[in-house]
Amino acid sequence: MGLLGLKVPEDVKEACLVLDKYYVPTRYPNAWAEGIPEDYYFKGEAENAIARARRVVEWVEEVWRELSRRGGR
Image (cartoon, rainbow, N blue to C red; front, side, top):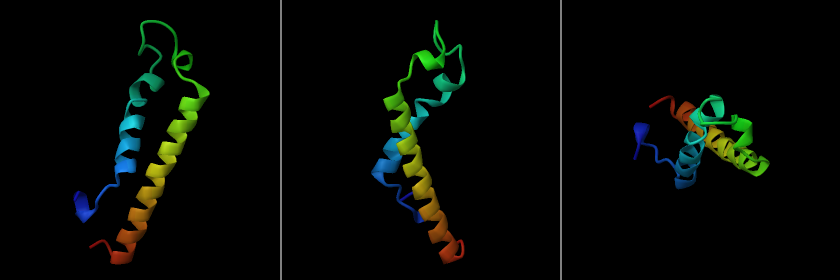
């Protein structure tokens, strides 16, 4: 169990780990010796990242609704 007694689903954990890998190199053009972030990513990777981000947001919304229903306890 994690914070507030919640168990983070494995797919959400995996999604976060995958998304974490995109954080720095996609934001900073000097992350590579040459080229820009656009040179290193493909449409399929972007679509996959968006799908994973959606899953994380869905889970957070589920948790938020559950905590709201409990009254924050």
